[in-house]
Length: 134
Image (cartoon, rainbow, N blue to C red; front, side):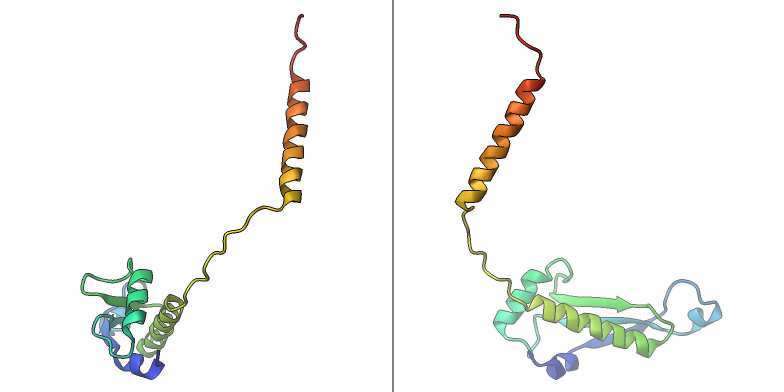
């Protein structure tokens, strides 16, 4: 994965931000929408695309586009920087392959301890019962 090539494929759209801000918010388009087309990306290999498609399945549109929006600050440039950071973090986290799980068995000592505690609790509970009338 090459950061520079991926950043060239990003498309940005500025829209009006919601929330408090008075007149300023009504005049200035400070909200940034970042769009990344995963399907038509040339910076990623087919394996990387497939892996990201699986990991980011809930965040992708039907056309396999990732859309991130940021309206944290009142500055358009700062919002753009924040959205790029979020995007790069998402991509790097998505490309991490999970370690393969190695199945293990419990040790003999842990099995023995477990059965002993089970026996102790069982005895404790039988002692709580009312004595039988034999």
